[in-house]
Amino acid sequence: MKFSDFVASDAIRARVEADSKEGVIREMVRALVDAGRITRSDEESIVRAIMKREDLGSTGIGRGVAVPHTKHPGVTRLVGTVAVSPPGIDFESLDGDPVHLFFLLVSPPDRPGDHLRALENISRQLRDDTFCRLLKAAKGPVDIQHLLEEADSQGVAS
Image 1 (tube, rainbow, N blue to C red):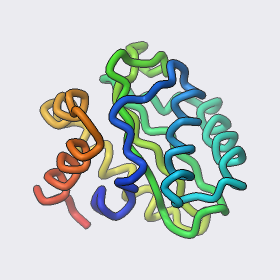
Image 2 (cartoon, rainbow, N blue to C red):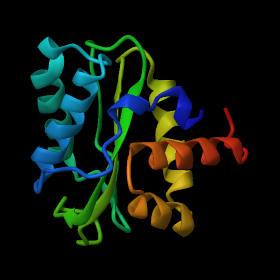
Image 3 (cartoon, rainbow, N blue to C red):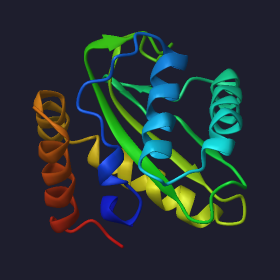
């Protein structure tokens, strides 16, 4: 699965305003609402579902990366977005470090395979230190989109 299969390019945020875990999740979900990828009526329940998932254990996987995600009946296909926080946010990460890169996913409950393939793609790409460094340094959403397209073209299995 490629980034282009699920990342809503019009919801990418190169510089989040939020300075808390819930704040960045809300900002990213709002970006998906603003991009027309999820409905405003589902916005709050999606935020709550992601926060409930965070209560089970932080999706801050370390090395400055978090992958908040949930399954929700308000979406008919996997959708996600990317956000960057240059100063970093305390996300209760496994390594205790602030998080700079966020990949948020929302998938339909009846499509667990898509959800897992997207998580696998994200984790595989984020093991690449150069990719992470370039994402953190991106000046805008278009730069991030180009980096995702480049990652897609470098042989990510579909």
